[in-house]
Image (cartoon, rainbow, N blue to C red):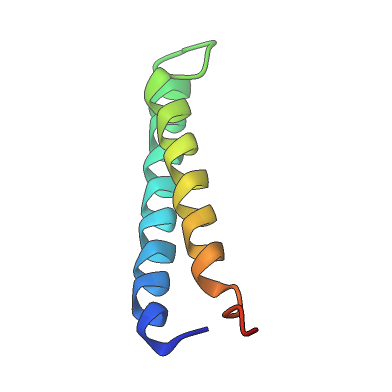
Length: 66
């Protein structure tokens, strides 16, 4: 992996963790309020986390050397 991508990849991983924490917080709030369905925010946060994780994984891939 190019060194220039390493910092960006780490930041993306931190963002993915933050998104995961927010999603868990939404779930806890819903459960505490007696909710029986997943909150819409949690679904959106989970989708965003997956996209950020995918971006981080792409940056972790080895460079194509031909």
